[in-house]
Length: 163
Image 1: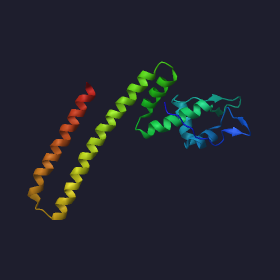
Image 2: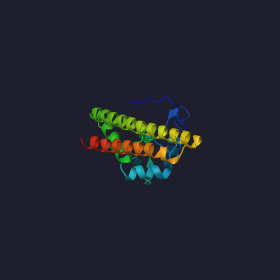
Image 3: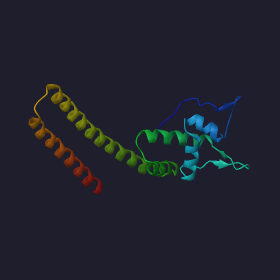
Image 4: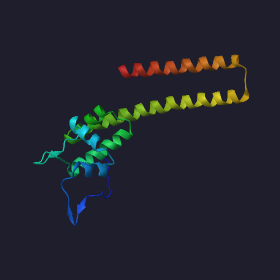
């Protein structure tokens, strides 16, 4: 699991650690919008305790969960995937499920990178062709080759997803 050794703003009040944080404090600590925190609560991804006044109060554990969510969003996890991942790591027995989710995400990301690399190559060749002002008929075969390659790749990826 990721370890964060950072010193959070609002973590300490004098020398006594704070045990609960308001929505505003949690938003500042996690660089997240207050409305986003409320949305996560609505989706039951992070459900902070409620005070007698009905306000949300986030624990230190909630703050760490929000930081994990932020990291997972950076790695292209959807909110539903994040919800499953957070539940897997918090139930105590789901570390294998979380590991498999991360492994799948790595594989998907590698496929995206390969696809983007082929697009970059196509763009480089296009720049070269346009720079050299080659006649159009020479480009048609290359365009068809790239078109077929991209569609083969998409078809292969869709077949792998169904397996």
